[in-house]
Structures are given as structure tokens and as C-alpha cells.
Length: 85
Image (cartoon, rainbow, N blue to C red; front, top):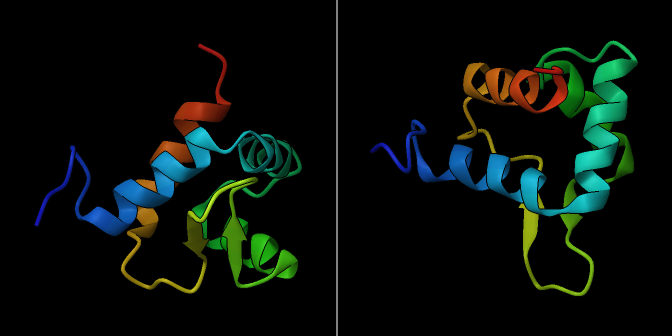
């Protein structure tokens, strides 16, 4: 079921989490610049930090093992936040 323009809640949540978490947002942008230009490759690198990402001073958590996150939509999202317009 679509959620806020995304294929599902899980994909929206992942993109929103990355947007809202400054540290993860900076890391994602750095990894993109280093050549991790798809959600699949980015995910492999992010998992080196652990299976989940917890926001600073929050109970919110992004589970990097969530297979309901749509890879193609996340790649498009990553491109949109890392490309100078």
C-alpha cells in the first residue's frame, strides 16, 4: 500500500529516517561520494556499522535488515539528496 508517495511505509520510513538523522545523512552523502551509488551497495556498507541505526537521543531505529524497503526507490531518494541541483 502506498505511503506518502513511496511504495510502502518501510521505504518512506527509511528515507525519512535518513533525512532526519544528521549523522546518518552525512554518512550517506559521504558514502555516495565514495562510489556507493545504489541502495544495495550503500546498504552493504552501512551494515558494517551494525544491523540497525539508532537516532541520537531517540528510541527511533532503522533496521537495515528490513527487506520491505524498495531498493529502486531508495536509490532514487539517495540520488536526490546527494546531487547538487
